[in-house]
Amino acid sequence: MIKAEQRQIVWIELYLAVVKCCEVDYLGSNRVVASTSGEAEQVKGGGAVTLGDDPRHATITLTKNYFEDDASKYDNNGYGQNIYVWFDILGHEVKHLDHIAESGNKLSYVVKFFGAYMKMGHDNVPEEKEADLCRNRFNDFYNHVSKIYGVDSFKKLFSEKADKEIIQTIDLWWNDFKNIK
Image (cartoon, rainbow, N blue to C red; front, side):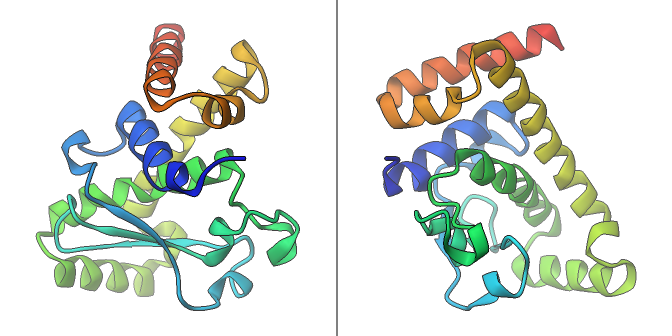
């Protein structure tokens, strides 16, 4: 069983620092929280939003299903124990920390994104496409690790190892991945 505090801290900090989809110094003080509304039922599979005045103190809000350990809940979208799904969504959301920094403050960030969403639609906004590149980088990394080290490598790593060993292993895997690319 993967502990909730690992989902909150270790998964995010280690993975995001490794794939470097945003400035590494942005990491450490950000929060990942469950939404208080019921939008998981409205968006198939759930979703997320990243907001903040400062990329070092932003909040990534995920729909409640990401915190549900029972995989059968939310129409089989209970992702609490699914490392792949967590990394996949966070691989996208963390890039928005750079976008917060570029905007300068929360209001500018929200106004810019809202205007772009209204004009172009979510999937066509350049910042969303850029964030998807980070998600894609994680998917390439995950597939590499699964192929070389075994399909359940990530799950085993996070459920069986201490933080220091997790860091060392991910560093090893990441360096291996970079050398092959």
